[in-house]
Image (cartoon, rainbow, N blue to C red; front, side, top):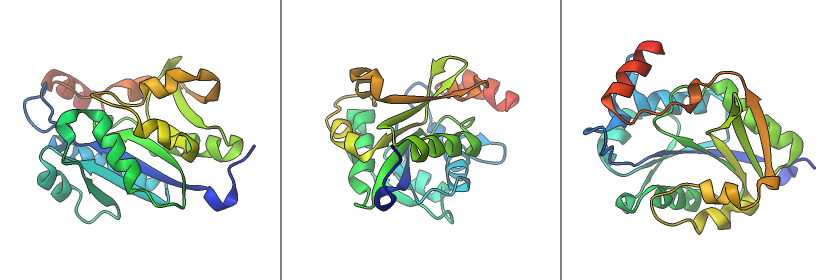
Length: 202
């Protein structure tokens, strides 16, 4: 089944509220080829021409918001970011308006998720009407993952420092997979060593 025309709006939610405890400084603000890392991720989402783009900020929230100035997106403040990733997921979903038929959840530290990847995932949802659409990079599931509105209550029920992994595992038959050959989108930036290696390779 295809996505209903009246609910085909897709919003991106970029989770960028973490405290970067392993990094020792806000990784959202690391330089990524001349611009802050979070801005690089947001620009990829914006280039995909989604209906709305939201960025959830928490730790270093003011600085992250400043790094995104001038971009046509919405900043969502997560005052409970210390609870973990679930709190950012809740804040992002709660910010969506009723016209949004699906949300694409991106992580603010995965700069190799390209506009083309986003467009293919959204296109697969529009074509299939699947409840969940997830990418597979050389056979390994990764991000970003798209969730239809029918899944939002399950996302809002996630607790603690975890994302939507439990929602994905609850019923794999709901997931439509889109295959990609490039494994680089699996990389996230948690340490300075990873940042230096990935920035050089990117």
